[in-house]
Length: 393
Image 1 (tube, rainbow, N blue to C red):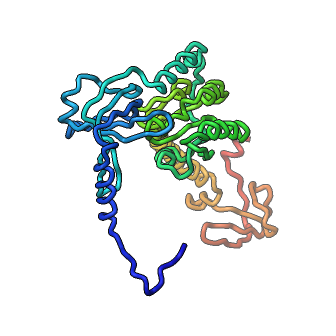
Image 2: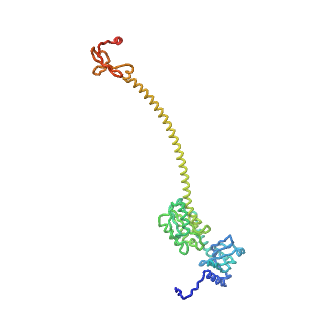
């Protein structure tokens, strides 16, 4: 590309000037003023605040943004819906601040159902007759899916909405991203390839097809007959979360569960975990209360046993003390030395042998007499037997 030399004067235009020029050229063209355009209505939405109706007009190859302002809409006697084929009268208008243009409709009339709407209705009826929508074909979702595959566009808002909720409320779930093209002519084949990848990889408990909202033509790939039949025959449970609440595709009808949004799909998975977590907490509280009750019961029982054993031990000690005192007294009484306190003494010969009878003593024998506090040595000078003893003999 040639660059201007320093001697050349460059004319610089502001964006506003360019847009104003485009506006003047387009809106001044008689070929774009008060013209009739035919096509099929898509993405129809009414803004309640101002009463304006916005929709897209398409012929299958191209699309045109259209608007019917409230003052014109109130004079129309038809109810405009998606899939309707219409003939619209209006002019091309530009919004120079945004650099966009649209077809401002002042009058329109219905011309029957659009070709795309008719083709979609025909395909839906064919699939219904094949039994693709039958409830018996639905696979029950696992209660607590451990491994979940996400088929979606990497880094999309739909993906992050789903991932954020799962990680926050059910971090035990393992998520695997399988990238796919989610819009355009190659979307359906890319999504089917994603399902095949999930089938060849480690077994997944659940497959979730995720896509954010968009225009009807953006979601058209999810009405592809091959993709719909492929999901219908898929062996693992499938959740579809495509678009917004009002968006329905044929894939939604054959999926095992259809969720309105990616956020709703994540909430559905998390819900089961939260239910079980709540139950586990309830059981934990019950078990803890039962353990506390049993602990208090055994604690009181042990305290009772302790008091009983203390009383029994005290009684046993007192009995033992009494018995010991009695035995001590008897032992003291049986002690030979105790006789010394009563005035008795012990006599023995010089060899230390105790003398129990006078027959063991002779006159002039030396004997020792043992008292409590000492002993004496004496010589026998007289021996006399006791008359009472002799009488007994």
